[in-house]
Image 1: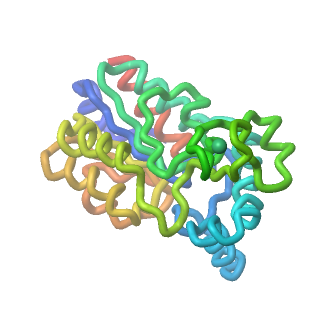
Image 2: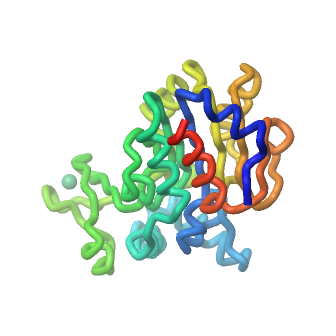
Length: 253
Ligand SMILES: [Zn+2]
């Protein structure tokens, strides 16, 4: 697999990059995701039940039900390891003066790989927040594996919630502001969107903004998406195969 020649030439002049990732990048680490966050369950009924369990309403009414699903997602996250796509994204950040990563993934694998300037727009399933006192915390892998019931706050014994965006909840305002500043106002030279079917407006918009301003835009996905016709290069393949090729060109430039 190789990159188009005109893309290789263009990558030599890039000094800032924005990368946007979705479920496909996690899937290459063996993490199946849930419906509505860019992933699917084969069984539609199971998918609907999962979405319901991961809703703000269920968290209020039956937090144990929400936690059964969240703890399963958290177990998948701690059992997985970053893949070649995660590592290529780290190399991009280390090679350039300005870098931002916007991810829809909630497994924390980008940070684990070493990415630093990360906007995890949907949060992280290992992070917690107390519903009573707002204390924030983070599970260790051992705590995730031992998780059985609704976890309680060590400070006040209140019920904890995952510090991730549930269905029916707003995106965190601070992260939306960062997204606007780093991807829509100060548009990077190159915007790469990888492993996402890009259904959410806040994922689509930075790519369209970059394309509209004449920046370099690259899509990496096994299948075409609604963004394919808007980007300058739409590359068919796995993020773990294509992102290392891109990162190596940028790193060597
Ligand atoms: Zn508390």
